[in-house]
Image (tube, rainbow, N blue to C red):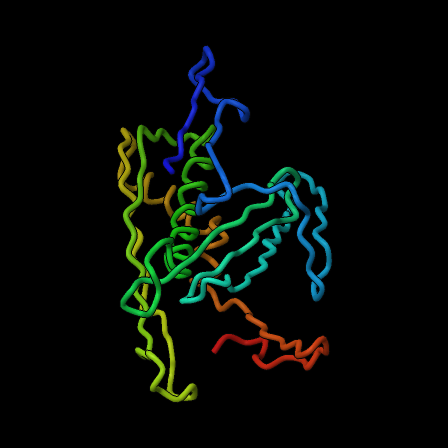
Length: 224
């Protein structure tokens, strides 16, 4: 089923929030749902209003479950503490080379896309009213990982994965000087939370809950 976008420009050429809609159904890879998700091991989302210029906290809550069809097919429910951010169900698969069906983007594809989308959001936001004239902007990106190919014959302790690097090329059309646009891109890079999560040493904690009992941390606070 093909999604359809409906756009109704205002007189000023801008778009209102309700001017954009997507055709969704239970068969689409991404769909918005009305149900309120539950997480048993984490606190409920809460949003604290702050003054302009202060730090505002964003929490992305994610529930992942394997689908009965198997072969790496998973459903993720995503919601956040941001008011009116919506609750979304997303389907993920893997390519046939690693045992999937290739029917939906892989987890790493979503990861890479989130990084690029976040950076482009800050390009859009920081250009408005900041003295930077941007005629157009787009992003070309390549993210590279390596992992041990395991189709069932490799011991778990011998499987490892690593991120080798990410190339993010912003392609901008602007009458501004190269120095000014380079300065602008630095601001966007510093403001992009997803990019900073990758570029900085972000703590990652992995805890285990087994048969309804909290076992505790199996991965430390510090990144590997």
